[in-house]
Length: 243
Image (cartoon, rainbow, N blue to C red; front, side, top):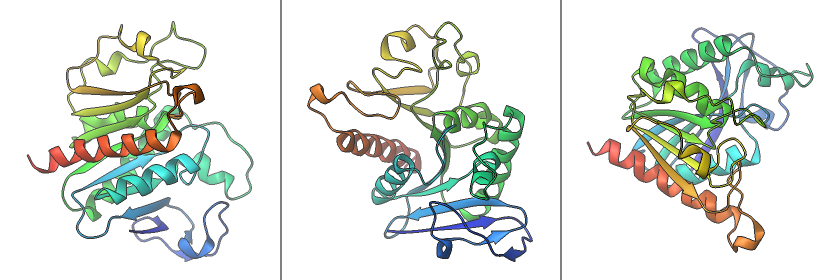
């Protein structure tokens, strides 16, 4: 497998820059653009997946890195990108909250359009938590082949009485949601009460939280759950590429 990071933009000008958490030799900096990283499998990819990060951690967080590596090892090319508010942290602008939803969706559209030009074969979209929720809002509009969400935030933290699932009722895009059974943003018992589209397949990880980490007393490990998640994603996308 191989991986690298770069900024993509039509007609982008190259310059210098530093990026916390990403080796400076792995990317290039331009005046404007999207910081993007690819994990390629050995051989021909069966499909490609654009994977967006969650609200509080960057695209090269341990979770994102481990998932990208695992999914790529199973034959799927993974493209990670960073929303502008998170990329700004790398430029020394301090910790910022996520941008307004309209801006996040606009950035998703831009990245999808650019990656669509590069990717061959089926192209799936998705992400961790907030990144997956933003993708779910655009999946039908973008006519994505499929949607993959890891730790979907069915409701805001501490506000289970305010579900964010209205758009999921009529979702047409084939969707896989990998969710921890005790996810604080949507556990198994609560999610079972939501009227979700028949296009959505839920895969539950035993005793796992929002980051797919299981309770120690379960006897399971985080690595096992990440492997299981990668297996399910690869199988889901593999079924897509064979249709």
